[in-house]
Image 1: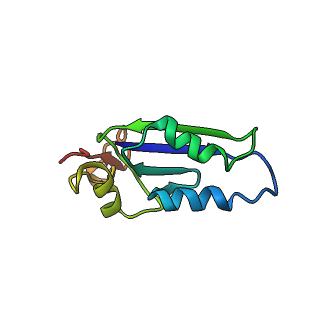
Image 2 (image 1 turned 60 degrees about the vertical axis):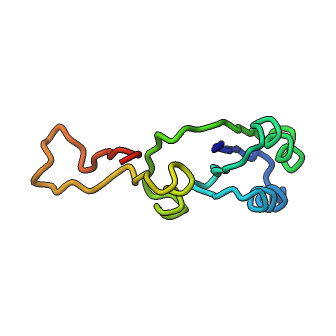
Length: 117
């Protein structure tokens, strides 16, 4: 299973190094500032218990299972890592540039591509 682990750390000046070390040892990949992805056979509750001892009582933590229909742009990990996490190399980045001449005024200058192919 793949989990998204997200947190909001409230305590200024606290050293959260043990939280980051635990996530890294578990094999999680940091994809955004406060979001990590983890592939594991553990349950969300088990992951939360392992991480909760490293955060303050006012900090916020979310551990949720995610599926393989995912899109992304400009993450802290490369596209190959994301493909490995989600569908064994079949996923693609969320956005591909659209040439300005091809975009209509109502379309953004990026388009979503299929995560599975």
